[in-house]
Image 1 (cartoon, rainbow, N blue to C red):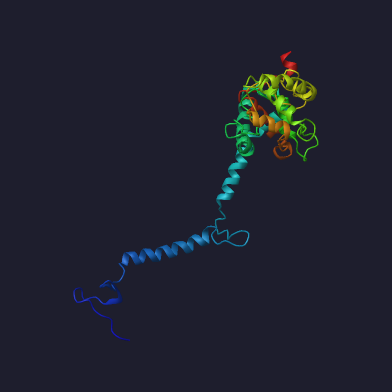
Image 2 (cartoon, rainbow, N blue to C red):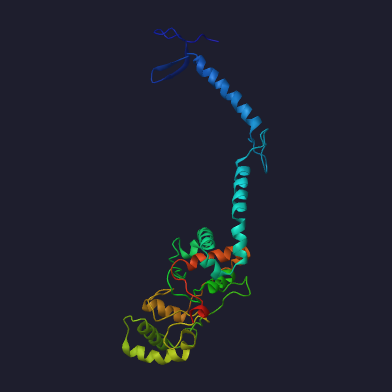
Length: 295
């Protein structure tokens, strides 16, 4: 083996590596650095022995300590569940109106409902419950099926137009463009609906559409267009629209209506979870009193 070159200035052998005329000296590592490096090796061996460390197919080596953050989290969750078990039991045994009027239960239900809403409802109804095209705004007082606590509970528990729950709310507007109405009739009734909601419209066509509306739409939406909750029929006389309020959007909904679907939540969230969601949504601002309570 050929002897390595010695740097003439420092008297230290080089490693033989050279970059752009700069040669690397073969200086030994500082002893303190070497001892720290050895210490990290010893520490890592001790860590592997004491803590869970080596991943296996479905788990990992547990180490002497048997300590995992998962166990710590599970313990915290169990502690939290135990702390609120009393309130959960009370909500399970209490009717919705009593929950709303009880300060402690109402506060707990609203907090729990807000948490559930963020996980299960915000994807469709928005993070602020403001809704989106095809997804109702839960902050206002415009309700398809009703906004009192019991009605909200039923809607959440069983959902709308789904094939999972036999008690799901169901209503379906016919496609009037599928041979039920002529194009001119759809155009005229569109103008009449625009008139009902105080929007710009053609008065002549709206007058012709009034008869079309009475024969085909009033049975569900009401003679004055204010809707029918027993059918889930929207109010056509206000400024709130689920699928849009322009002439084209209204005509399209008459011709080929869209029908939203909501899954049932009681089987997934349980009675307590649905109660909490109902109380939370009722508290957003559009909640109504039950009809019997308001008479």
